Length: 120
Image (cartoon, rainbow, N blue to C red; front, top):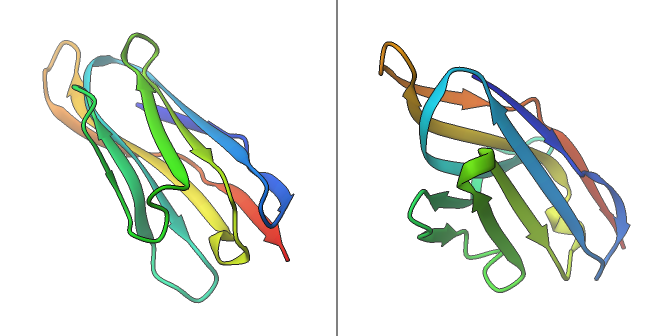
């Protein structure tokens, strides 16, 4: 399973960006998709995740500013980021877990990361 993330870039504080991540491959079903981020010198942290049924979870630091959504039929997850702050600067990674076709084994896959830089 491959995940392709896009949408990162440079934005001024207070601005917005929308990240997207599409999963492809021998996917029978995706159970959940997530966005993580890693800033220089810091550990990777969960930003938000969404389950197939639509339930969501957010880090306290982004609650009310970020919104995660998923289009099940397209195996794609989005992260709408608003009111961005310099401390949101990081490489953002998407992740997916689910079930493969044919074997029906479970999988966990990661995207390549997309840089988000917020200038003050």
